[in-house]
Image 1 (tube, rainbow, N blue to C red):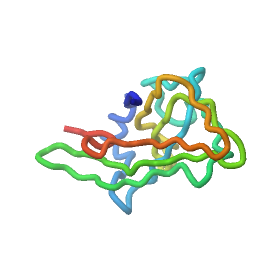
Image 2: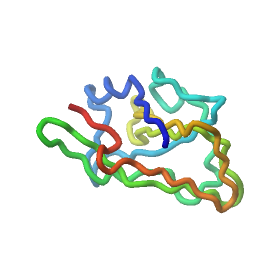
Image 3: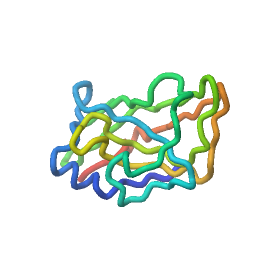
Length: 144
């Protein structure tokens, strides 16, 4: 199972209204990929801080769907739908980290939210897929 790590700047960005995480009308969240040699650090703040893997051979897009964003008893939970990345026309990778970022704001541009460490490198050959299985019970994250 992949290990979740939030970017430190995300907490401040939430408090400064950088993110609109509303279902249907909110910002567009996307995924980026990093190789082991280019590991993200919790202190990174925007996508430009990272060296990412090319998504030229990605079938479809790297955008996520926010399926729920609500608070219950003082705890806010953001849930996103699972995402399948499929290589088409060539390989994707090698990759080890799946990075979640907000693709909508222009200032700061592409603020980072969190990343998942898959523990070892993966290369998707033409036609192969990686299913990113987000936790439906706990959501992408919770704020209490």
